Length: 533
Ligand code: FAD
Ligand code: NAP
Image (cartoon, rainbow, N blue to C red):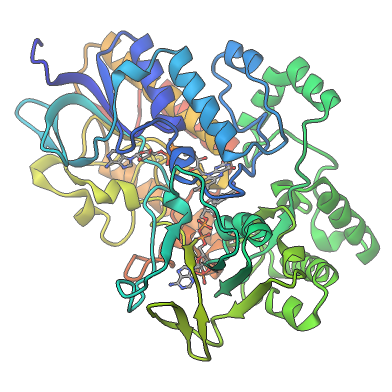
């Protein structure tokens, strides 16, 4: 087709997912373009530039595996790379693979409509541009639509408002300032220690305390780097077939209550000393059994009490009332110890909610806080937010918003019945945010690329998930989720952080390896569960 506004594939988003998808499409010889709202690549790592931002999956694993050269030529400096380093890496990838000319920046997609007669997607941007594409691929991210609290008086406030999820590009100096941070999830927990070092006073407004384990971050041990460079492909393969997307490490987990209290303590302590998200795998049943989970809570509470000098502050920092890990576990660098600093105050806003912003700060039920800057670390409309922000219409003009009104419905988190030739990368109903995301992104991109190749080889024009396969998958995702403790916490995994959002556990918790096998079986059986025409 010679229409200059037609592409075989349009991809939305230029983060880890969009960049790799674009590379694969171009390798396949397809005309493809990425549309990206930002003025640069990086996605998450473009937007979240707050002090302390870094990955919580080890850099050696939180990076692409698809090209050995990329791994060989990039040397990560720290166990958990900082945001600037990850952003530099993604820019390097974009340049190295010559992707930039195929990315249209500063371009937010507003709508996408499937034209049944022409079997094409018509894509409109906020600037009014229109493109057509045979394949429409959402690489829009699970955590890319920031959520700010509705606080009365925001317009009145004369100080500076910052958002961790949309941080300014220029250096922000907090020296001599009174700074407030609202939100104590991963973003709050990472930024608080650094803000405390700079600000004259730091006030942390906490609604729900989070469970957190130490990162023990630092330069990568040369022996460990050598181990990864010698065994990288095998370790990556192990990760792909594992439960959470990480290679096996340490003793095989047993049920928490199958060992003595001393042995349990030993294993928890060892995991704590190693640091990082692996703590959740210390015992086999921490995600499934409330009594087992309670042993982790007891251990983690003990750590907070030992790290925080003032007992009354430590008590406020103890997460209670929900299972550990049912909200995303945080990985921190000196978060709890930061509350020992004389310039840091913790305000429990469950007891004294924030009522309003005033000209000079924030007012809770109890008192007024004068603040020069307020930092909102209040999270995202996660998993479905970015797809639903686009007005997507499939067959018969049915909108994705209406289809997902009671919660997301997908087959494998990759496709939606009624929306032919549309793919989601790490969509709802896939392991996505419960795994190493880069690994899950690569798996989805590879699957989609193989699928497009299958269509080409067989001279097929469209592929569309069957309603029956979708229904079965949605039921399965929910049933597996219900075996776990996840539904017992009001988290963003279940949509609970967004008023009015349906409360559904949106992620597949059957394991990365099991999921990969299912996806491969579907492909091997000539895309069973899909109709190709
Ligand atoms: P994103 O990186 O979110 O990219 C999506 C892109 O799509 C964005 O650039 C956005 O601007 C663009 N976009 C969205 N909608 C539109 C539209 N309508 N039009 C045009 N463009 C659009 N995961 C891990 O596994 N390990 C970690 O350590 C980790 N750390 C994280 C730290 C932070 C601060 C956050 C917020 C998330 C973290 N995550 C982590 C999750 C992280 O989002 C993924 O690891 C990964 O970066 C997602 O890549 P992506 O390309 O799928 O999406
Ligand atoms: P989040 O986990 O959703 O945390 C948001 C915080 O803001 C919570 O403490 C929440 O309290 C609070 N909050 C929300 N609305 C509020 C309101 N109206 N008033 C007061 N408090 C409010 O968001 P996040 O910290 O940005 O993290 C999101 C996800 O991104 C993480 O779970 C993780 O997957 C990823 N991430 C990873 C890293 C990393 O370590 N690599 C860093 C940042 C983010 P409630 O809990 O009470 O709602």
